[in-house]
Image (spheres, rainbow, N blue to C red):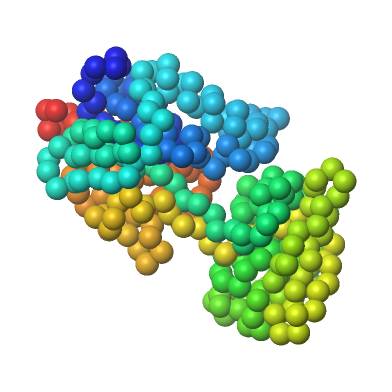
Length: 313
């Protein structure tokens, strides 16, 4: 696709979903542009080793995986824009997308903006991301075999992740700021009864403790009632207080659930507005994996290709 070609599709987002959609649109000879946003490559660019993406038997670094996906999309003609979309207008047959630099139009828009993990916001938190601190048990649990680790949270996500992590860790401490969980009763009971799970009630993390190499070696916990501090030795900590889908720029024009995740039509990636599709973590609050994001990116591109063909665009 050349710079002066009018796009038939706009992809908003550059993680596995966005890049995969771009690859499929490119192979279908559909002129398209992709907005990379504030974090080109998405959350995997701040992930260390990825061991569960097919075709990499020895694992692959997150940034390398994203670079390979981008290069593959570039090979098939994707036009990349280092811009962030700030608003959209889906009221007409031709959809409008606005960035801080310019306005763009296309009959098809694929939204692949992902979601952002909620962190605690502690001063030294960023230093330990990928060095013992994670927000994805499915992604990183394998690296903590026979180690003592912690999970922060009190909802179903935290309870499920704590239980899942017992498959790897020798001990899991579930840290919750209150004296009872918010999660479902059955998940609460499973966690409470599990021999590998300890529960730190009425506790919050005051700070992270690192070793000489900068890796996590412990958590300084603060009692929410007495204010007393104590150190919990762990080599891993999973923050499980939820994710925020990156949909602020949509300003509510598309249907979403109570947590902001986009709701696609049953069994497809199409939204309620013709020519608009959503893929990846922005519409998936269950799996949140690179491979499932790539899969829905493929789906969105194929659906978009069929839509363009049916409309004779």
